Image (cartoon, rainbow, N blue to C red):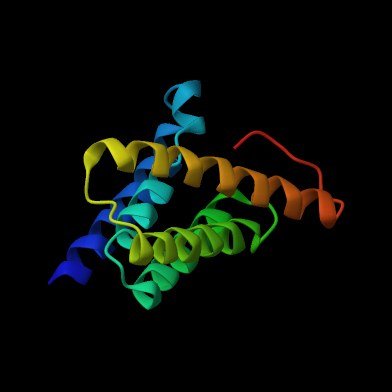
Length: 126
């Protein structure tokens, strides 16, 4: 049942990110699927986190029209790193989860931009 809830939340987050970017410019910079991926990674199940990270990244890549696989790789890497940290460190406190989400966003963006730079692709607005 938990997997179904996360899957539905991930699909809704992908749909919202895809539609809200046309409503107002600030919504284009909010990465809603990444928040769901971090939530799944904080459940301490690495395989589930990797699956949701890969699914979210490939779906965002397919809808954005950019480099296919860059988001998939970055979100999968973030899911793995956060899941491994959550297995070793007790992160059930809300005050600890806020910096974890901020760090996940930073890592996701660094890997995403690094993939584009490594492959010689131009970056465009999300």
